[in-house]
Amino acid sequence: MKIAMIGTGYVGLVSGVCFSDFGHDVVCVDKDPRKIEMLERGEVPIYEPGLDEVMARNVEAGRLTFTGDLAAAVDGADAVFIAVGTPTRRGDGHADLTYVMSAAEEIARAMTGYTVVVTKSTVPVGTNRKVKQTIAKANPEAVFDVASNPEFLREGAAIDDFMRPDRVVVGIQTDRAREVMADIYRPLFLRECPVVYTDLESAEMIKYGANAFLAAKITFINEMAMLCEKTGADIKAVAKGMGLDGRIGNKFLHAGPGYGGSCFPKDTSALARIGQEHACPMRITETVMEVNDAVKRRMIDKVIDLCGGSVNGKTIAVLGVTFKPNTDDMRDAPSLTIVPALVGRGAKVRVVDPQGRREGEALLPGVVWTEDAYKAAQNAEALIILTEWNEFRGLDLKRLARKMSAPRMADLRNIYPPSEARRAGFEAYVCIGRQGFG
Ligand code: NAD
Image (spheres, rainbow, N blue to C red):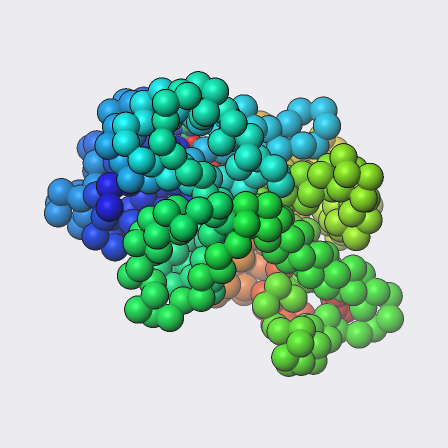
């Protein structure tokens, strides 16, 4: 199979690299020349564990190339995947389809022979039909089908998720397109990965349904955590007891500082918007968005309380700013709400993150970046664990407490048992949905 992948971001690059590892010939395209230059030098523009190795292996084998020339990549391709961004449109919360539609037009002009144009980007219901119209209008001679193939990989575990997905979803209109998609994903059939073939609209809806459901699950446990704090229950025990029920499951039941990232905020917003447009308000999703905003703001209050009612003039160490561990992605991270709020209230914030600095520097003005947790904690009056990177899970708490001028911790990921923090010399400790002290 000859595949062109349009967009080499978190989804496009991983998908392109993995398809080449399946044995297909893949050309990855991006309109950002810096990304293409890096990729051509063998460098990976994003942080994604394991990606560099699979990429190098397939470049070496001659199955994977990179270019800024979309037309050359699309010419003769059996399938062209659109994996460009669909961010929230300013003003109305809808998914911005500008990049998808302009890619579709460019593809239309470059297609030769029968081609399946596959949308991998997360797009509102009806978009694949619009892509089809756009292509037909831009190139009335084109012989093609469209397919919807939403992606479910998680940043930080993307290679494994792509190679061993829970399922692949394919929306198609013709048997011919189905055959091409089946050829592309054939290596996964050997692993008995379920493939859901369906119509375009259902495939588009599955992606939004899945993300909104997961966002609701996280938000549900975060709200339960609030109630646990008031009632003396322990959210960790509650989540464990709930999660052992097979109908509920233990995933996405970790209370924390609110969801963020490149998908949940924008996809819940887009789903709410789609509902409004169809006079079918998605009230649960809308409430999830509101509660999540409140959860993030509650974190600011927690830190202020920890600091005795004011953070003004106080030095605060923040451990982790990416929206989750094992990624450098800062899009809609809770840190972007919490850190500026502390800076705005006069705190002197020191930040440490294993991969977040490159993106984070521009997004978090007024903070000082440090190399490790101990340097960040030097003479600090509070320490916040915001992202549960592995290197923050095994900290020497005694050493940390000794370095701080006021050893106080806000463990917003519930990593450390309160008793351990107390034994290490912390005078105050707050967490999520459990009793702290101090
Ligand atoms: P991204 O912003 O990391 O990457 C998009 C890339 O597309 C950029 O490099 C951009 O330069 C390029 N691009 C835009 N227009 C182009 C064009 N006309 N030609 C060539 N390149 C072009 O985005 P992402 O995080 O990879 O997300 C892509 C899509 O996948 C989104 O719809 C997103 O919702 C969805 N998705 C993302 C994830 C995730 O974890 N990031 C998971 C599942 C689905």
